[in-house]
Image (tube, rainbow, N blue to C red):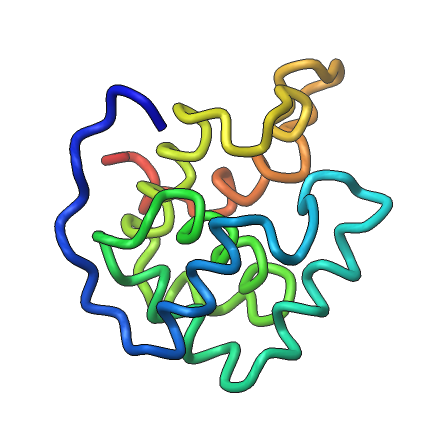
Length: 136
């Protein structure tokens, strides 16, 4: 992304770094095209040691915001208790960065185009973090 400062070197293991690169490059498809989302999530989850590698990506503050966000999305779908293991403030920061950087590519993922107090499929995840999201 233009106008972003260079990121410090990530400390990801080789398998987690490879998965982060694939997430960053969109190798699994568009997570926010709900016609293909389930398959994209399943494909990531089918990777060797997916759970551990995804949590490693989420925890690494030097991994790209997109990789951390998509890793969080997979974990919310497949192992939602990861947020308490990683820490709600860490996950909240990822979702704030995703909203700020428009990483879904559409406002309705966040509930910004919905009526009737619907937070949207991504926005609800941020709300679920509860008080842990307040500092973010």
